[in-house]
Length: 397
Ligand SMILES: *Cc1c(COP(=O)(O)O)cnc(C)c1O
Picture: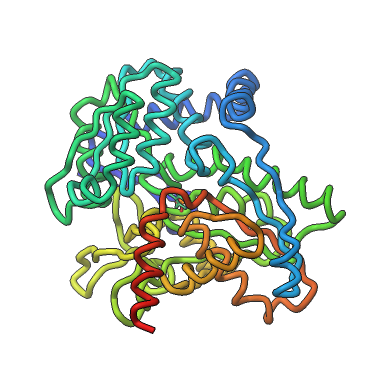
């Protein structure tokens, strides 16, 4: 039995879930409605963002990159947040919700392990037992992150079903949630999943855009001409975009993973190459074959490797308020190298997609424009992948 709650983003969103989950989603929505205007909740949340996570993150002017591409570039430095990426913002917020709802246990899904590590971090700090679901292929590929989660006290469950990756880990976590609905909070890691998750996750990531907006005003006295972020499930991007959506003069760009090229089928460019469908409880763009079967996603960036995307992005695409374009693995690698050599900043492979799209758009925006790029995370986690890819490229040449 499926029940559809309000689709919040045009025709996209909703809650296409089994009856048993409706209770938990209602409970979550009611609690969230109570706290979203509550000063005490946000005082505690903001306090953790400052004292524990290290906010505000800087907005860094990139002088050499700006000179090279003749475009004034500011970097929103989520790579400097505790645990090295923006995901902690959302986990701290949801951790406080779980505590407020008196949940005794938190579960989460993870692909590459980034969301698992952020979840395990918050659970250690808030003293809530934590179980992470991870596809067995990802488990083997991401041994170091598995160890991090375990070191932080989390239990990591290997998922052997389906393609043994993120999509299947998410299915398994939803199954666990159905079984343990009274005691357990499901900490979803991106602005995706059934209502109210896309709204809650966005609201906890809004701090990225709100800080960036006031920081750019302070630096330049005006709004940027364009903003850029990478889109996996869509949380760092919606977090940045939200503060600028009302500013009509600001162009908004989302970089999807075009992997080895959209024509090869090996990509995660959900908005560029997918069609609307239901995955993980919401209606949004989706990579699917002609029978409606969900297709495997591919990206060199583990955090972009997801066949779905948050529903608000589908709405922003169809309303044309934001433009989404694919960036290939090679383009992302090249952008990562450029940023490293120009600015001394090694960003995550995911974030490098946003950098690459910005470089592509210089001509269209015009010389001397001002832009903000979300550096969603740091590149330490990607060193082995980058090394292997650059070695393979050198052998080819
Ligand atoms: C997980 C991750 C992403 C993608 O997730 P979104 O929800 O789309 O933001 C991007 N960058 C980094 C560094 C990540 O870890």
